[in-house]
Image (cartoon, rainbow, N blue to C red; front, top):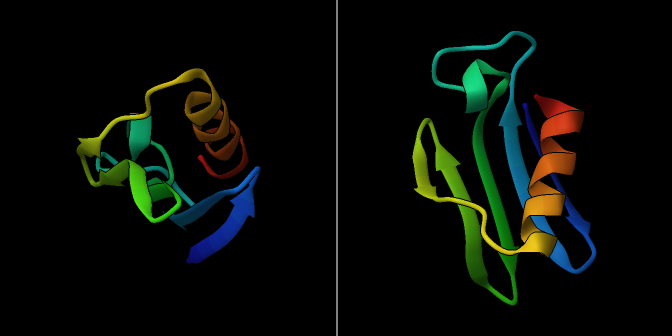
Length: 70
């Protein structure tokens, strides 16, 4: 259940499920999430945080993805 796309020049990849999990973001449906721009990883969640979202624009995209998939 991978979904990929682009929003405002940022590329994202989300692995999500039908039901939430302990391993999901906020115990939700997203178990993996990556947001990149210009090849640089800006957000990375792989059953835990490696790179948390920072900056208003990145946080806005992150929250939109949570609303859509989590």
